[in-house]
Image (tube, rainbow, N blue to C red; front, top):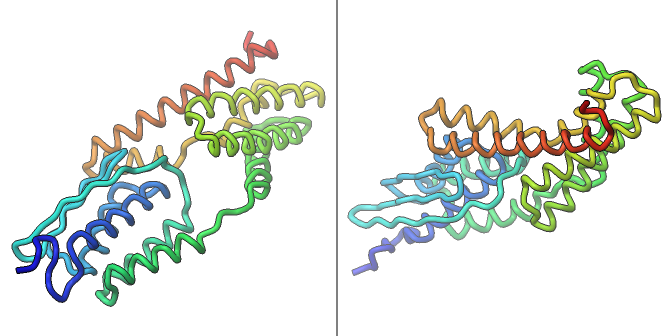
Length: 262
């Protein structure tokens, strides 16, 4: 008789479960909502031959149960730090759709996934820093900061993004990192705006912190709660709230240093 996790002529349940979990983990870390993670993991598992599929999406872990006939298996994996990578997210969705057609084995699916991981490159850090600087400066104008402050905001935001990257590479706590980046960005922007003669100092010191605003996690938190995943949504909402608190602390300290909080 075949082992409980293996069916003759099909991929083992172990291979199916672990590949589906890998898709789910990567999707979570790329910024997908709970619904998308569940749907795509189920697409992969069903495309590889699983008949019964149950997925549980948690904030820091994923679990899946797959079954064929009388056999079933449950596996769990840890989710790493969450970020946003839309191009990789869409690549995972496209690959899962292909696997769902039933033309892949688990080994072939994993090979395609490894290839996707290899070819999914990030933009150079300096391009990201420049783009962040331009975006924050543009937001500043939308918030009615005066023209003398635009240059300092651009420089402070780009510098803040580079510091943020270095702290992330050193695995510094994300909340401490947010406070540090908010403080440095606000101080640099405030000093530059004061030197340039800006008359909108209060706003000038806040705008560089916009790069830290957790927009995608905030949206996913609301979406998960509305779609019936209150535990996951609440965990994401708490993370967003704590992030905002540390961002505020960084700005508040910078205002105290420059005497703008009085």
